[in-house]
Image (cartoon, rainbow, N blue to C red; front, top):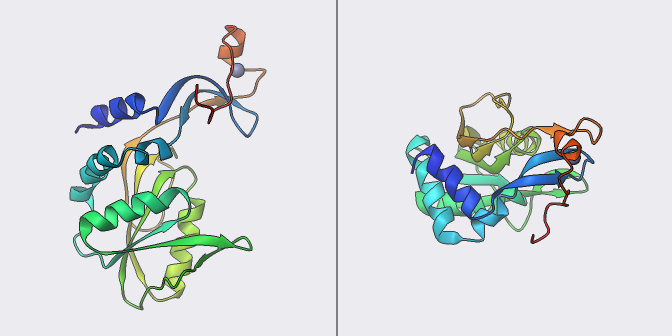
Length: 188
Ligand code: ZN
């Protein structure tokens, strides 16, 4: 699968929608990305994650991900690599390992996230695992939405880059063109 085919798949599965959307922030956009729609289709998700595997570091002891977005990607990546899969989640606002999950000092960890926008959650999980003595060897994602600005101090390996421009309602060209707006997340 080339990058183009991944994007075609995203379009077919409504991972990446085109239209006129009102985002939670109040801004408008012509594209909307819902990566959960990829993992709704495990076979396709498996194929997409398989594209990433040859780009990953060889020696990985475990895969870690921030909840919720990264959980399924973390599981699929770990399944394909044959290693452990753990995820961190927020407890009173702070990323933490619960459910008996732990990492050992010196363990080589691949951090994954489905979509990296600012990379804030990934960075928090990196800190958490580094404090536990683990070594973060790389960060991988299906989509880089940061426009190439996300940096983690270790190799960052996104499968595809997707730029989504957003507008204030006043400056929105789609509003100006009279295109009806929808709230993303709805089925239509
Ligand atoms: Zn608009």
